[in-house]
Every structure is written in C-alpha cells, then in structure tokens.
Length: 193
Image 1 (spheres, rainbow, N blue to C red):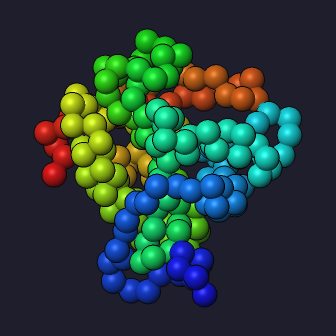
Image 2: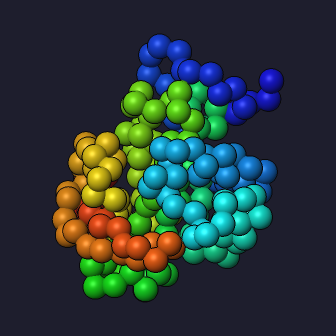
Image 3: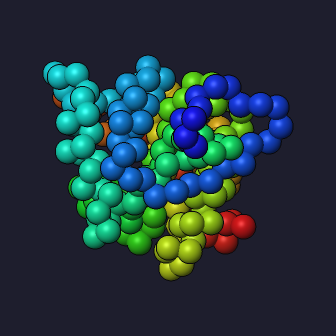
C-alpha cells in the first residue's frame, strides 16, 4: 500500500506528525475529509448543493499555486495523510471585519479528517509543527490567529493548550445565509518554541 493511504487506527505511542505542502492529488482526500460529519460541522460547504470534487478543486485548487497567499498543508501522522491545515496573512483577507488581529498576523484553519486519528493528540503535534513552519515562512509575524466556532470546545481547548489566548467573540456570515459565532484566539510569536 502506498504511503499515506492506510487509514487504520494509530498504534499505541506518540505518533510522528509532519506537515507537507498539499498537492492536486490530495484534493480527493480533502473532499473526503470535508464530507466527514465532524469536519463538515465546522467547515460548511456551498449553500444549496452537495460538496463535490469540482467545488473543492475550484475553491482550494488555486491555493496550491506558488503565487497564492494561502498555503495548504497535509497533516501526516506516522506517514498517513490524516488532515489539513491552511494559513494566510490577515492582510490578504481584509473582508473579515473589525474583529481582526494585526494585518501581518498569520491565521490558521485546520481539521483532522480521519476519525480514527481524532482524540489522540494529533492536533497539538500538528499545531506545534505548523508553528515551526509558520515561524520560518513568516519570521516577522506579530501574532498567530485562529477563529473557531464557539461550540467547538475541543478546538478551543486545543488552541489554549498550545498557547493561544481566547479573545473576542464575533458573528460571521455563513454560505447558507445564516450566521455563526466565532471565538478569536491569538498567540504571540514569543510563545513559539
């Protein structure tokens, strides 16, 4: 079996977690992860239509280009592709409103798409590896930022556990016309190890 395709539950012990740049061939995995009920709860797809590979390619494909201000990563645990991370400078998405951190801050979104790998400490290892990469790619970043749904207690715990501080709660429009209340989290660069 090719590396990155074994979806069985992890063995005992601390897994090795790495992030690698996402490639076009990973978009099918991303679609499967976004369709997972637990991930879809926090990453809603397009309104009024089922999420498809065409939609994922249209939305995320351009982010794989070298000139894109958004970087996409695949999370690998023990050599298996289990989730995704994306990051970008806040200044590259000025439509976020007044709740935003400094424009040069780096924002992060993430998801563990393989159910067998959730609740096993992958999130903290993933964000630790992401911090290392973000610090290297953006050495001048004044802060790191994540905004998660206020109901996502696991993600809020994860962020606090890796040095983020909960901040402002704010409402954001959803693709379906509704609104979701997010909680902004900031982490100062000096916290990064």
